[in-house]
Length: 410
Image 1 (cartoon, one colour):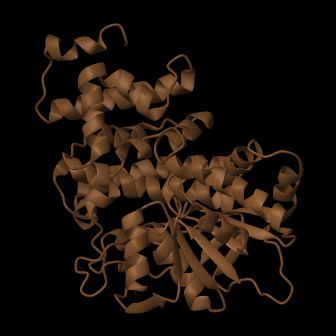
Image 2: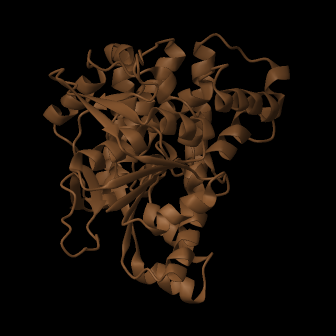
């Protein structure tokens, strides 16, 4: 069977590609818009994935080869052709690329109809976004009509997936420029709506279930605590998440932010708050000496992570919906507005926005908050207040000239 993976980055190669390769019986094609990555993977012809048990420290290495690579821009016809010939399509992209991928899937549906393809294609949707399937259903459908739309609705099955493997780049690449390292989670949660192919079993690494709810749990719980540690650690000058977990104050604040999110998830979805043993294991993995996750990786693209549907604002608004005050979630988010990295474009832009527009307008814009809405205003006020307290604690004092942009907005 044919599998095309859109996005040849950490998750695309380090989870999806590696697992389909180990499964056997699948021809892999990686598709990416990064021409240098495409040419490099094509020329090298292989890559390796090191998997680590963060508790025991045991390791295994997979050597992945025999795949094709296609450039989604320069080789677009070949790319859409690969999609149309696929039994599985998997996406591993950031939300900023969702609309472009939706266009690709619409073009795939058109070509499938022209080629007379009548079999189903399962599109495994990946990305940190609550409501993935609904977003793509709407984004693809609006680009199609008539027989093309019928083809999409009849034979293209959109499935939310949850890839929860922590993957990064090794400190040393040795003879493999495209090596990856991460934990050893073996399963991919997939919506229990999978089409069947005669004589073809479901891949053994698929765990069928409610991936839509699990995605909310991943972003508004797992990613919430991870990024809370990262934002606070960056302001403290730490290099790796292990240092953040060893800092009693940071660990405690991140725990309380996580707990607020967990209480909201329990109220909304019936997901129970993990017991003490499971909570301790989560923090033990962050502190693992076998995987030192770099703070610069955790906090990269801060504006995306501070967005309305992402790991802070999403659970904060859910908390308010259920009568829970998101005090610690908004405090953790505030550290994201205090994070400064001269090598990270979004951090530079964030600092410039604050200097130009003031903190209230910046928080409202970045977080997608409407001050005329009560819940949005509450989240906005909590974040802005926390930012001012944090910066004051770091030595900033009131100076009318530097705070003029705030007048009339609070």
